[in-house]
Length: 433
Image (tube, rainbow, N blue to C red; front, side, top):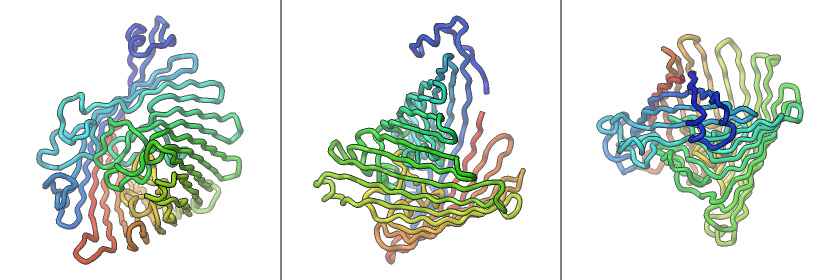
């Protein structure tokens, strides 16, 4: 972390506010990260680690990579005001010329670099004000899944997605956090997503590309209450109201979601319990209801965790989603808030399924953490089929760089001659400064 002294004259040009009027200027704190991200997938005639053809075309390999840098510029503006910004560069270093045929993310809608202006975008810029126990944050920012389970910043890709939002956080009530948010839109996280495109939130996104679905052409209003008054227990309840779902019309939807987490050092062998669930209720015009149907979506999940010996953590979970009109899915990405969410199984768990989840993670200390996890889903979203996802993940820090290597094997019921399995390999190196 470094500090840069910015003069009052330069700062006033950047942001017009009287908070910059002091002769001493302000301190800007710089942090950031650099990352290299490689992901390859193969099914049917595709080759793992191959780069033949244009990604998405029949028979083409599906190998993607990015090299990226994020720079955070944050400042205390005095009198309870703070400022934050983040500049992001997304490139490939020419990897698409011989090693890959696409990107995990881009900043111009194309995986081929054109010029520096096309590869840089403003991922954050906000002003925050602290008033007693209330914080008001206005602008482009990250939203956490723990407080906003249906509009949150996903961390699985090279960089997180962000939202144009107004957020108010209050802690006046003992052991309670109140969060109100007005979310206007964001840049959708997904495979090959254009992260410089800040548009509408949407539901029922495609599990692979993160595009399509039903756009929320108005804003989403959210209220979350998180309470820790009960011993060992954290209760979180969220409510969303979204408008103009699927177009500029009278379609609306409400989302109610709750999560109860029980954990304490006093419980034997590190026992942890979790219960989650809720409902998405669309209110559609007759024309829209006739076209796509109108049925509430109900989902719930159960989770138990255990740490029987030092370094070893075990987890079992069960989630269930019915066949409602709207998927249980992040409106700003492709993942779900479900306990059974892993690296690549969101397509099988977000609607009309029952899923069993198991995970074992062993922390070796200096040699990193090994994770083995898997799900079994009876996915009925298209046709009745069993979907299996098994994932082996290794995480380690070496030379101050965080490394992740993952192998994913997926299989499903399919008609004769159709693809019925997929392999995914992912390697990520990330340095935080």
